[in-house]
Amino acid sequence: MNILLAMIPAFFWGTTYAMTQLTLPDWPALLLGALRALPAGLILLAIKPSKPKQADWSILIKLGAINIAVFFSLIFIMALTLPSAISGIGMISVPVFAMLFHWVNSKKRPNLLQAFSGAMLIGLAWMLFDPSTISLNPIGLMAMLAAISCIIVGSTITKALGSRIHWWTILTWQLIIGGTLLLVASGIQALFSPEQYINVVNQFSLTNGFGISWIILLNTVLGYSMYVWLLQRMSVVDFTFGGIANPIAGIVCGLVLMGESYTPHQYLLMSGMILASIAPTLIQLFRQRIRNPTASV
Image 1 (spheres, rainbow, N blue to C red):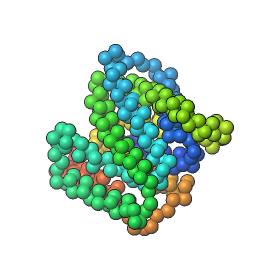
Image 2 (cartoon, rainbow, N blue to C red):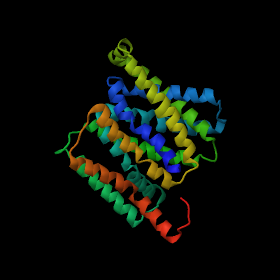
Image 3 (spheres, helix red, strand yellow):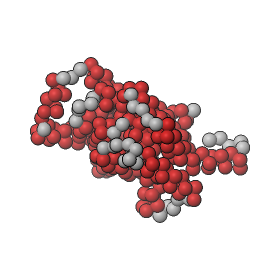
Image 4 (tube, rainbow, N blue to C red):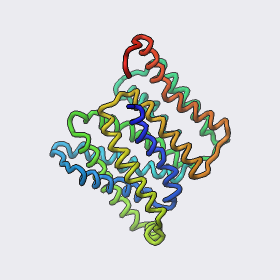
C-alpha cells in the first residue's frame, strides 16, 4: 500500500511535461511556475491556515527559492524544450547525483552495489542521449541537470525539518514564497518581453484552463501534499519503488498525448535505466527477506 501511495505524486509529476506541451505550449516558463505554485499555496493556506515562527522564515525562504522558484522554472523549461519521455527518464538519475552529493558533502561513501548501479545508469543514459541517435535541446538538458540538483538539496533540507516545522506549514509557505518570487520574476520578464504575455491573455482557451487546473490541483496541491506528508512517514524503499511511476507516466503521456515514438533499442535503454535506478534497493530488500522472511517492508 505504501508503494502505491508513493506512486500517486510521482505519476502526476510525470504528466507535467506532456500536459504542458499539449495545453500550454507557448507560455513562458516563469509564468507557468508562478501559476503552478502561488494558487496552490493559497489553496492549502485556506484549507488549513498556518503561520511560521519568526525563526523559521529564513529556512522557508531558502526552501521556497530552491524547491519551488528555481525548480519549477527548470521543470517548465524542460517541458517546453524536451520530449516528455526523455524528461521523465532523465529525472530518474536523481539517485546517482544524490549518491555523489552525500559522498562529497557527508563523506558517506556508496557501497559497491550502489556504485555499480550508478555507473550502469550513467552508461545507459550516455547511450540514450547520444547526439548521433537523438537530437535534444541543450538548454533542456542543462535545465534537467540543474533541476536534479534542486531536488537533492531541497529534499535534504525538507527531511531535516521534519521534526522542527509541521509538514503542512513547510508545504504551504514554500509554495507561497516560491510562487511570489516567480510572480515577481515573470512580471520583470513581461516588462522586457511583453509579446508572450499579451498572447497568453488574448489567446486564452478552455484547453489552457484545463492544463493550468491539472498542474495546480493534481500536480501541485495533491502531489506535493502527499509527497511532504509521506516523506516523514515512509521508508526509502517505498519512495524508490514509487518513484518509477514518474518516468513511466512521462513515457506513456508522451506516446498517447504527444505521439512520441522511439526505436525498440531506445525503449530498452529507458527500461534499463529504470531498473538500474531501483536495483540497489531491490537487491537490499531481497537480502533482508532472505535473512528475515517474516520481516515486513
